[in-house]
Length: 313
Image 1 (cartoon, helix red, strand yellow):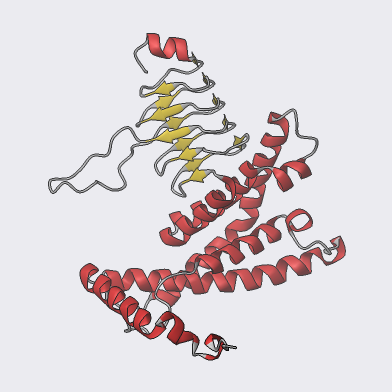
Image 2: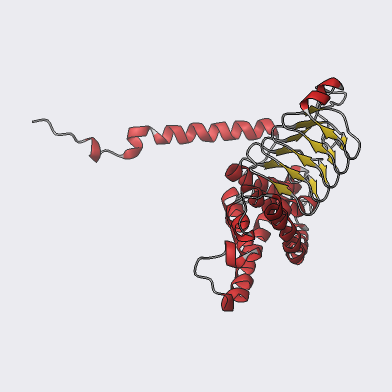
């Protein structure tokens, strides 16, 4: 009887791992040469870690809302100890990620990394100091969701269950990092929430207090969008760009204002698409599936029918 000895062979022989590893190294070297990047001059990880940021964000959510998003066995008498310990660990981990981003940015610009540690320390210290105000701001979002949804039985249900709240928590944290210059960490933070909720909010978007995203799947809010206070939007709403201007060489121009301004007390119903640097006036209601590429005055009530009649569709 024949004996199968395949399990006795070296696993690397089965897959030709040595050859594959070599080819992958060649591909990396070619990519780095093509993009003008230098590898091996810093002896460690080159970029921040998405996995590390996921752990940091989970810890920060727990520290902000310890009895709801913290550990299951937490008791009120140990709440402050938990918050302090969790913040210490999370902020030190965030500091390490900030250093990675700043060092990477300095290398890309051909500048020295000698000032990076001090800059990172200052940014994360400011971020830590902002957390109490961020918690107060997030409380307005939670209350807006509770008061804005008749299906909500409690603020605890909103905080534990609503994807829009998770996306907004991540956005508030990411927006602070974005404004502080940690753009890559901010984008990673937003994309973690995007993956979990289907809600895509660029960390550059400016959003006022008492913001509520109901249901949420498919919502897209662009980088230069400005949203006022007490705004409510529903699933599949897009606040996007109408066009992407280019420079003389045909490259896209970065950072130009290109997304809508939504003033206070606006409601935007499911499936609405608003494109370009247009202003939706205070107190307006934008109906479901409306396509808008123009601004509307305060108090407007835009439906599919009148949007088409006015030439907006």
